[in-house]
Length: 572
Ligand SMILES: [Zn+2]
Ligand SMILES: [Zn+2]
Image (cartoon, rainbow, N blue to C red; front, side, top):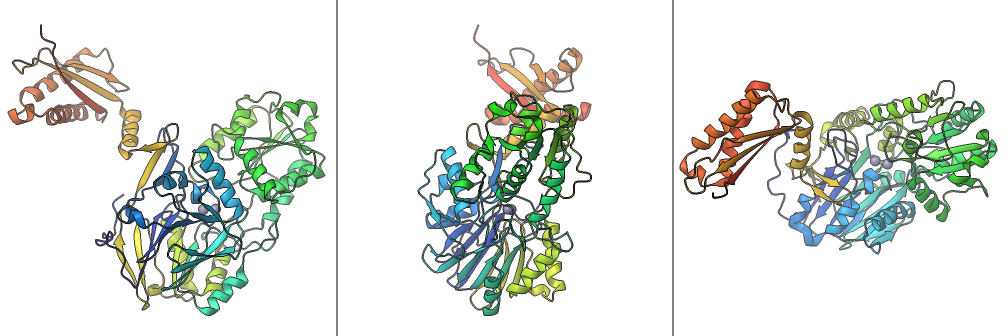
């Protein structure tokens, strides 16, 4: 994608004394990879540091994290990371970030608990984690900026909005939120505090735009109760439920209902085991005695006495549910009379794998239809009226929609406009666009700073160059063609006809005539190369590659990866 914005030319210069920069290096114009740089002459820190899950057109990639190029010129000044909540799109890049910048990380208990597990998995030090309580305040780095955590309702415990008290004014970052009037844990969004901040004057509001397209209010978490209750009433066999393992309130509801219906609960999936243990240790999850049973004991209970909670709501191939559907879980077959309930939304891009998973469950005889059940999932993000309520409570001088596709951000800007905010007071940021706030009240958008995506191959736990991903796509589409040229080291002439070998390319391996054609083209490219190029192995390879690519495209329309190898013939 070509950026329609100019470059912020002075980005690598430190901010002026009266300036504060806000730079989303991910999370805008896309879902996932949320990370906001906050930078002034005396402060430099991040709000959230998330990852993006790869899509089908990024083969062999396990995770995508932001490119932190903007931070490099200021590498020795980084002070902290502040976290709003523990979802992967907000904390998932930290193992990679902390390796480069081991700075303190501030967050609430459940957020840090999730992060701690993640860091341990990566063999990283957990000594940098700093616990913050609801309404807690922390002076960041030099102490010039004070951060404050305000509770919000969301689909994970301990989620917070973040307030930054800065010399440029008070900034409010909503984090991911909804305004659930009756959350399972009774911890409602701190609207009174937000209102009080609004009364005193807020310079800027950055707010979650995810569900701006939905009218009215987001249904309360409590509304799922009826749907799941109906599923239990209507299921004679085992009830399988898959949901996000960090959605502790949903898990609490499921377990409570299982208890009511005299069913035991079985957990299937590593992250469920881990998150349930964490939530219990923090007293965020209250399980009746002996309700959990082990997989190996499943066959001891009649089928109508079991509820199985599993990971894999997005069709992930290594999840508990996927293993179950492949019949890899002993003693726990899915069969006729059973029911599978997906108590989660489909993250855009996962629809195909989810549909495949439902198909497989039906093939095994289970019921997957939600018809007649009522809602079994409630979104963790606020709808239009809730977003409007936040704007009206905070009444910022300046409004910046965040978290969502560019269309979401625009719609959120339009919502603010409908509430009376004029265009000068609404800024649409996009990935990498820098917003400058000055103490005298000026707001500027000077252009973009370097941003991008880094690809992670988890097996080796290191970054993969974007070119590797591109090569994999080419290989997948059009295959690869190798051309081997043997050169006589004395005369510099070719010692034999170039040999052509291909894999996954349209040319059939036994199509000799076509092989000869390519061989001839490679020979001509070599022989016609000027002397200077002949002496430069890299330029020579490029010349041969170019000639082959041209003829291949002309004759087949394909664009395979072309790899010329120029070798010295062994002397006779
Ligand atoms: Zn999020
Ligand atoms: Zn979230």
